[in-house]
Length: 298
Ligand code: 0GY
Image (cartoon, rainbow, N blue to C red; front, side, top):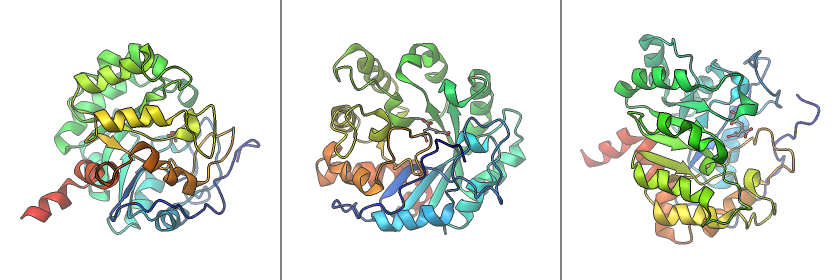
């Protein structure tokens, strides 16, 4: 583990807010354990181990029911730790993989059967050697027939550069952490207006109203400077918002959040039971478990 690595919170508080039954943590990761699932040689950081058993224990502790596990860059395109976690979840976790553009249809089908339903592309420069412009197009064509979607991670100032690429994709597109706005800028300022415009113009775009701990200048426990950004998205795009813990919080340097405190952030950004039900249950079920929704109606 890197010398300045902050391990996940050893004893998160029990949140005061109780999520609705069936709530989904739609953004979290597993790291290793490294002796079983070695980290990728090209990784930009070496984290602590944070395996499936800790993740599922946290899920239960926080009052959640399901997880969407997102392949982290430290595992490169080797999705073994992710697939292993999915296979231990009894169908209560889905996965977002990272893949090479040359991946075969057979390999994609194996991932699909394991519970993977999307691919993530990382445009955050500190996390990758090469920005994935070309890979994105090649992979998007391959995964569209599987009804998968694409997850993109970028910083607000990069949106101009990738706008044309990401708005022509044939699948749903999920944006991590609100496109990382600079929350010291006004919520009605030019930068966030560009992101709102993206969501408005492209009904296939979804957004994770996650990671106040990464975006906040004020910090815990309230992360109050992030609240207006999340609230605006929940208000305007209530049926296309998702929420996740981001456990085990890779690359946090300022502090390690208490996951219970993060759950208590939810009613600040989604103040009614109707909004909470959409954010935590109905939206993620529609995107990640559509087969269960269909089953309810047959
Ligand atoms: C996040 C954020 C980060 C890292 C990764 O895959 C990753 O390595 O996503 C980050 O460093 O901002 O979503 O976990």
